[in-house]
Image 1 (cartoon, helix red, strand yellow):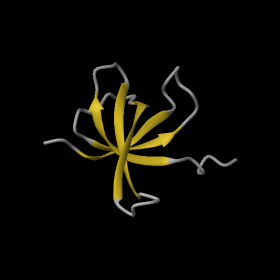
Image 2: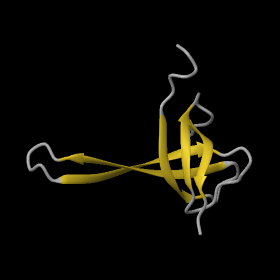
Image 3: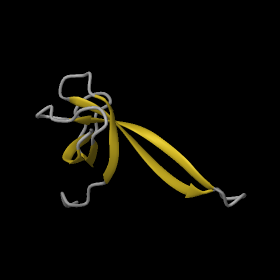
Length: 84
């Protein structure tokens, strides 16, 4: 398996209280299978932030990586936009 075949997600940082870790909320939209209505679903990921440059409200891109702790399996690859 190549290193380039890793999943990437874009989400918003909702917590930066841990050292070198952030919690990222990733939203997705899909159509309801029966009613055809557009549904919104979200999931929280714990991501590794080595330089501690992410803050609450930032939009970031996270990349799948090897397990770094019990819950951390993602790494912040870039900060797309900063919070105001």
